[in-house]
Image (cartoon, rainbow, N blue to C red; front, top):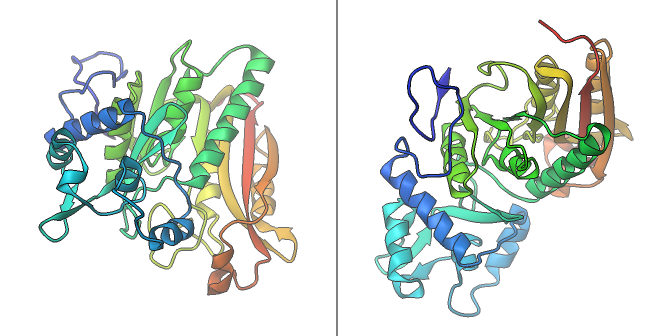
Length: 346
């Protein structure tokens, strides 16, 4: 198992990593990026990230004045050195995120998005790299689903989870947002991803937001994860992407194979009474939700409680023009809540 630490620990110490300081295992550029994120956050920065299609339309309008921090770190617009403070320019250069376009014009190669009181580093627009790390409207819907589920769990049991796993964590937004909801009794939060760039951003985002008890693991879903969890979170890609970009390609004929794998593997890693929260998408064909059918079939004998709901009936309408979805009526955002009700497994 490859672990990406936030802080050094003596041999034999519990695997509880602290992100409050800028840990010694963070590289020079990573440490500078943490300082950059904290500086921007302290300046009251706020940016809600939109879909790529909307982003392209907004940036096509052109600039209407001197670039703001939102222009630079949200809309990925170019800027001149004099548009930011010397401190900001130095931090960007030290963090390795300052791209020189033509000698006098620059651009940030990361974006900063806000979620509640937290701020997250992720890939700049456009997210065309195979290992790009995405943050957008699905992230906000996922966070809302987590908040709703947390509230329901507290009403039912009067407690919060002590061990949380975010599978395919990307920026770490799901797990780190959940950590804020459980702040009165801080849980261990494990952020897992197969994408090395995502692991780096998870590490940096945990440090920027001063989240404690964070463990970051390189893992193909749950294969390299130790132990069981009270809460497992997942917001996987769910489209068929011809470029097979990690953040977008869900696998299979309709893009839901990865979501099925997460549900099946995740159930086996839930502690007794634990819950799995899956936010994903499903192509509806002739009024039939094939993902729901496949999921119900695979979970039928697992001794779990299972609820399924459409969150948004129509996403990514432009995908219906592509061969993978030329039979689909629509692509819906869906939530899956799975509760471990049966005997605790070995």
